[in-house]
Structure formats: structure tokens, C-alpha cells
Image (cartoon, rainbow, N blue to C red):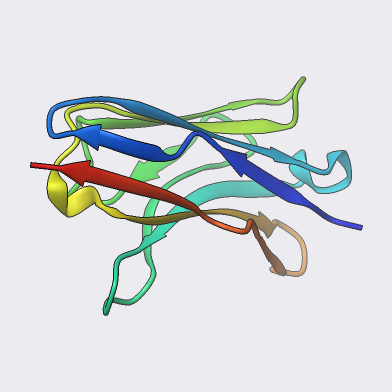
Length: 117
């Protein structure tokens, strides 16, 4: 059974930092692009950042220079380091695994990030 288990959300003041973690089943981690998405109330889910199985990464324009995605293949874990947080970063953050072959997507349960002004 494929699982994505997230942790690290919480409440932080504007300008603060948080690190999200997502540990995936070993069966899919090494064959997936790993990503973080977020969904704010009343808005569509949007891509925040993703990391390929190699060294490629890409980011939403709104988080460039503030967020960093990284993956530890030995731990089947992807991280999202979030610095200089803003109130508009408030959302539920979801971990995603996108299989390179076949394109199937798996999702974590989501973790709440709240940034107070």
C-alpha cells in the first residue's frame, strides 16, 4: 500500500520559517517526481515546488527565493524548507508523488500551515 506521511506544519509569525517533511513508501519514491502543493480556502490547489528523481527542481514564482525543496533518497523523504513566510502562504500543504512511468499521482493527507501577520 502506497503511503505519503507528512509532518511539520503549524502556526508561525510572518517572517518565520517552517520545514515540512513527507516520507513515502519505498516502492514509489525513487521512481517519482516529488512535489508539494497547497490549497488555501476558496482557492484551487496549486503547485508550490517539485523535485525530480535527479537534481531538477522548479518552484512557483510566488515562493522562489524563499522556499527550497530537497529529497533524501536514502530516507524516502522530501522536504520543503519555507523561509520568510508570509500570511498569503497560509494553506493546507499536500505532498505529491507523480510516477514517472504511467503518470499516476499519490497524495498525502495534508498539513496545515498558518502564517500570522
